[in-house]
Length: 439
Image 1 (cartoon, rainbow, N blue to C red):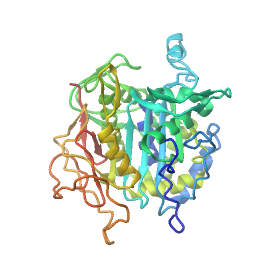
Image 2: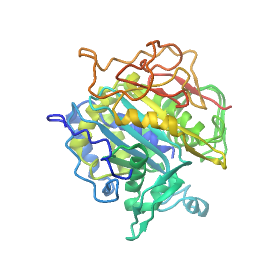
Image 3: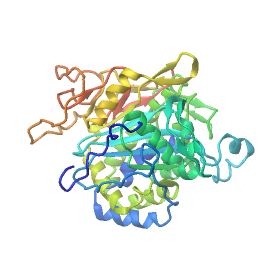
Image 4: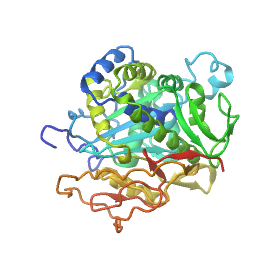
């Protein structure tokens, strides 16, 4: 443990078992968590008074989780799980018909699942998206009625939330992701569709580049967007993020790539517009976000959120990387994907060892292309600037390159203190300008 910091508690102890809206939540957290502790403390204290009841996270073996070490503004590794639920329950007009309620009510499914990893020294951040159709092992999860959903060797990731129910579902997803990655998840939150719509309105919309027209009649409201630069807000922004048949190859992996395009635009916009330092904007976003979120008891604290704010704000856009958890098509079912074990082990090890991630030179996902009119992204800042440049953490079993920075990926060349991800891992940095496309 660092003196005055938080313990390096991100790894599971040896011997333990291991909606589209979630990605908006991840980026929105960077908006809500601003750079001034007093602003965050006041804003979050006010809005937390109206937030839904919190939930308690369980340990990796299903027991009550051990206390979370104190987080400081300067140091401390953070593993924060954010999910988007597809529940239609309580959303009112437009979602209260029989078809919508039958599709998803109660806790719903974790339509999108995102892990935000902030390095111990707060110099880099990875936002990892997990495909909803990913088949993963799941631990036993307690249900709201006192029964227990038994452990399973393979189930769709998006069923984890429903296994625990409205009260225990968030904890079940956290246990599942912790078991999969080997990380201990100390903070978690979920957001509803209504929350995403409200947040998109609160920030005044997001300007997104479309390389091709985007049309999808399977989402609500239907999308019919011409190519070019479009400002998306409200329900239209939500539909864009949820669109599967309008982008890429109509797969969930294509949708994740599309969401990364939106999120990188959101991150750039909030930084350039000064949103992070505008108390009025922060309070407006915080109000609509937390009113539609369920938080873990470890996260529903103004002081903790303020310290997370400082941690997020320290990370520059070029050091904020969005990646998709490695997956391959399931040969037995074209509608499912399996963990790409070889690539996932490299990513998991890098996160466990708290190393910056280096994407390959051709890392963009299935529904993204570089914006030819955008300026080249800046090179990431060196986390070791002004220091020795060495790390006490051993490097994972990856092969360093010669340090060149050719190609589209703006992330740093791998060194002894960074991990080069295999070419099969897709993603981009927040300052990389991309456009959504349809194959």
